[in-house]
Length: 179
Image (cartoon, rainbow, N blue to C red; front, side, top):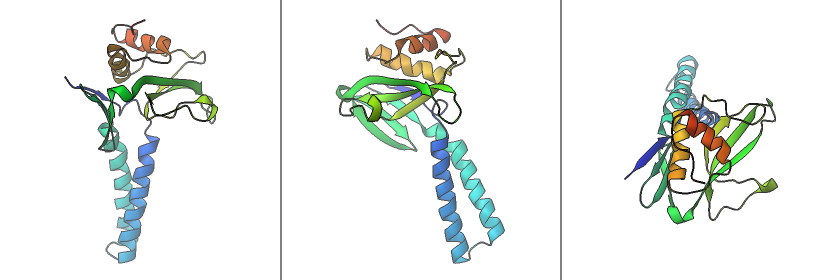
């Protein structure tokens, strides 16, 4: 059985907008230097590319689970992880330096990825969860986030902050993580 969780709504969009801007800039340079298009239409084409990437690409962020393992599909490129290499979900709770907003960053915890600087885990980013000032869920989290926690709970894989995961699961009427 294959389970698919759409990550587009729970992943930050800034990472794909940067890719869109780079693609638009390269397109604008090629079109303007070859003389194929004048400056005005060239800028419109570049803006269209950024908009298309910002709207379309987040929908291609998926996490697929099957009997062999996980496939993390980002920007239409799948990366496979066997179940024996998956150790659970790392949840880092902290404050954004720029805005002071509280958030939880959810990453895939892998067997061959030790904690990085400051003891923080650096696996692939799966989701960002906005929190209240006392580091609790807001109760308006997306269904996709609950499906992500349910997927790992169903496989018996640990989640670093089960209190946060269980609050999200309860808000969507899903069973809590196993103890």
